Each structure stands twice: as structure tokens, then as C-alpha cells.
Figure 1 (cartoon, rainbow, N blue to C red):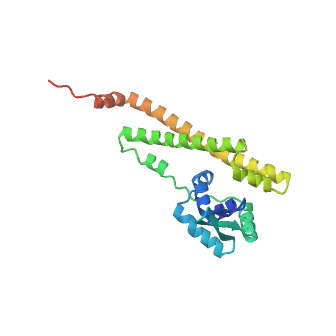
Figure 2: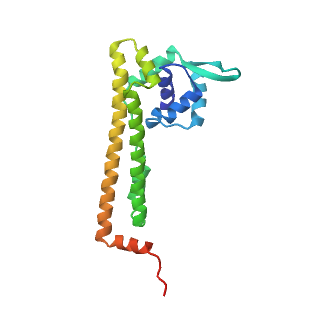
Figure 3: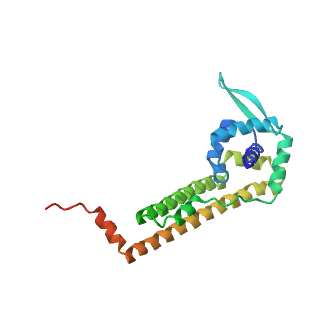
Length: 212
């Protein structure tokens, strides 16, 4: 159900097409709630059937037609009610840690690749989030600026940026923590290989065979 509220929350800033929403789900919102493109359009139809959003066909250029969605008062009320409730957390499902736990029968090079992949993933995540935060802080994000402009009070205007700073800042800290963890694991693995003579064994595997 959270995908429904992600859609409603996005539309609470202003109207947009399904394509606009898909692009947004690929950018900022995907860090908090990922969704396949194939899920979004059926949810838009579902929300419209429930009266939480409306849509109209808009002509772009001379021929191209697209459907633009807008949130209704009932939709705004629903997203406010949802956002006012305490957060809930799904059961832990962390395949990365699970693979690590049961990787003790694997070759050490597989374990190293595990840590290196994890490190690269969160380094890329950190960069992408930081790039987004930089745009937001420079006041260059059109939709956020629209939300600030539409906020009815100065308090709410301040909250638009402050809450986003906390949300994205928390995700940056999470990425930093995972990066530090992966670096520590790789450092430990280097020492583990040294203690057990695995570094030399691995090097010898890479040496070309000599001919006699």
C-alpha cells in the first residue's frame, strides 16, 4: 500500500503524468520506495477508481496526447492521515547479509567479491543521494520549490526542506555506515589471507605456467 501513498504524496505537490511519476520513482523516491514501472500505471487507475485522484487527457504539441493526474481533497486527506501515523517496519529480509553468513564454504575470492560489490553499491548510492541533496540545497529542484511556494504558512515552508534534509541525510549516513563496514571487512579479509598464506596462493594462481 505504501506505493499508493508515494504516488499520492508526489501528486500532493502538483499534477503530473504517469511518465513524470515513473521518472520520479527512478530518482529521489526510489531511495525510499522502489517500484517497477509496470506497477505504477495500474495503481494510478486504482487510485482514480477510489476517487483519490482524477485525470484528464492533455494534448502536447500538435498530436501527442498524455493523461495528467491530479490529487483530490479526499486524496490529500488520505496522505495526511497516513503520514501522521507512526512508522511501521517490514520483517528483515537482507539477502546480502544472509549470503555472507552462509558463504563460509565458498572460496575466499568469492567473499572478497561480495565485500567489493557491497562497497561499490553504497559508494554509488552515496554519490547519487549527495547529488540530489546538492540540487535541493541549491534550490534548483522544481517540484520541491513548487511545494515550498504552495505551502500556506512559513512554518510549513520551512518543514518542506527540513524534513527532506533529515530523510536524505539519514540515507547518506546509512550509506556511509555500509561503506565503512565494507572497508573494515576487506581489511579483515586482507589480514585473514596473510595469516593463512592465502595471498601467496592466490598470487601463484595468477602466475603463467613455466615451460621446460
